[in-house]
Image (cartoon, rainbow, N blue to C red):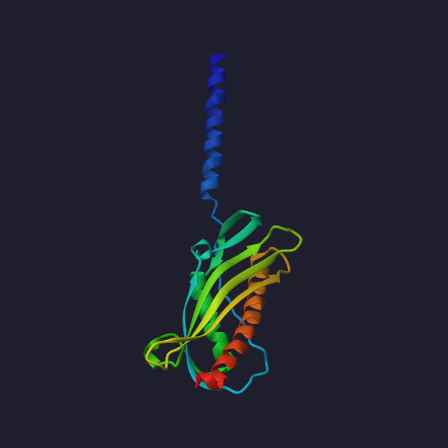
Length: 208
């Protein structure tokens, strides 16, 4: 009886090790990385004769990692290491903003640095940036932040605009592709609002 028990134990151990080995040999699911792409509306107003420096986008440390952040409860958040942004969200958002502003032709030039001696500086702070999955039937994405426009033409920078914006956008489903598409729509709408405010300030006689 003891010998049979020993044989059974050895067999079970070998079977377990075989299962573990097969699991270790199985390839891990690939990571998928995304960028954001906001699209301006087809209609354009006259280009402002001014240059704009889009400074870095500062994202709250809670949402600054490359992995997607999901909100699943009132105080419950999680991250998804399989689906993430190609770069930190601050960089991804900044590049999308620069491309949008250049495509909209709102300013004579849109720059990444001070090297071109820009007249205005756009600062951006993002406080909330996540996918809200608390209601499985109505997934949505969230982006909340604040934008400031500084006039660099004087001896000291002068603040011309301080604009808080908070947007939500429904997603077609909970898939990463649907969430990114919703973020693109949300960012496009937010930039349309920001563009109107920037134009109003820069075109104002008091800012000349």
